Image (cartoon, rainbow over all chains, first blue to last red; front, side, top):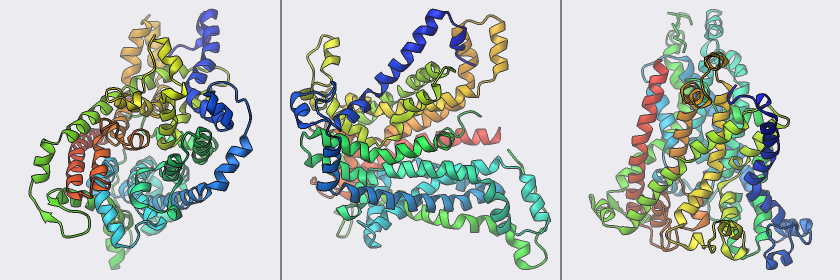
Length: 283
Length: 305
């Protein structure tokens, strides 16, 4: 283990570490703690510039109530869900198939196709913007949830295929060969042998894609205009313009918008981190 | 890395049986490849082609050759955006040593360390829109949030987001917050996979702490460093959200990056100059492409190893 376990250090160092660690955490999370506290403050605190101190009044219900009563925030949240969930299903499904193809078969174009998926996944969004916007307009999908979902599925399938292909490569190939010898066709090999083994990868991918898509801001502004289809990231930005100096509402809105990915992260931490750090331990 | 010898004729004598092993990969690939081509691969080519046209997004595009690029060469706004993009790349790379430092600090087994690690990682999970909003009111000097910090250095507070010299650095700083968390988690995973035998051997040889880190630990962390560099550079070239949320490119366009300037030119009150916009995007793409090729070349080497 590196660094040397703190238990082997001098008692003074141990004490310092044990006290310092929570302090460092507090410092690190200070921006977020300030937001959480501000989201329950009253107008008096705003006027007095009390952002760091203890709230003078607790307006939890009033602030959060105002958020849902007076604004389309709930609608935005619903839209984000309606974009993120179908994208997760679509992108992961496509990637299972494509990852299987690239992970199991040896054919000439294999590495080329793999590199197209990986490389395409790294390009700046702006090189896609004009043609994708134009395509959506021509297909009548501009300013609609399905247009946004379709783009996200396509784009995320690049990363997901990369992920699945690498995962499938680690599976024992003997299982596939055995199934073929017993007369299984290729679809059966996929459906009965490989797919059940992919379950841990499915969970990891699903939480990652959900978070990526939920947090997307760029495409939400490029492909969506109206409140009827606007995801919460773009919606929050729009509301921010309307809430001049009402920082308690901006904070409360930020917290609500951040909550779903945060919940998913804490519930499925292991899968989330396993997905994000894929390849970080081996050459 | 498996090498898969395929059985010569597994399926049987019928046509499908004879050909399924050759056709199957393409059938499995078809849906993803089709969608990816329509929405990602083809638009790249279309954008590059469009950069040689003058187009308002509605009428007929007019071929103007390299006129857009010639205009870019003398466009002072473009130069600022390019410079800021490079500042983003350089500044964002600080997330790597910072993330490594944080990971070294947290790689202990004390009470509650798991929870502490995930709380440190927390900023990465949150949308950049939220991070951007939070930091923009943080930096607002009227609210007195940063005032204590400036006082610490004996300075009067500066409105960093309204200051042409400071603004890009302030936005990069906000962007670093989640990126450090990401690099930290990569390095924590890397540290977890260190080979105990090598560490023990070096310790028995009496290697100093620093030598141990430099010669034994850091080389083993190379895969983590590779991923951290890749995601950080790509993330910095893509920086759009933070700029859009925190400054909208201002003041006076001084915090624009290429990604932001491109959108501003293509879809805003500056007029729908799609051709000019795609020329900016093409420059950004060319920078990224050089980088992607290097990454893919590295991956290819690993695949062969």
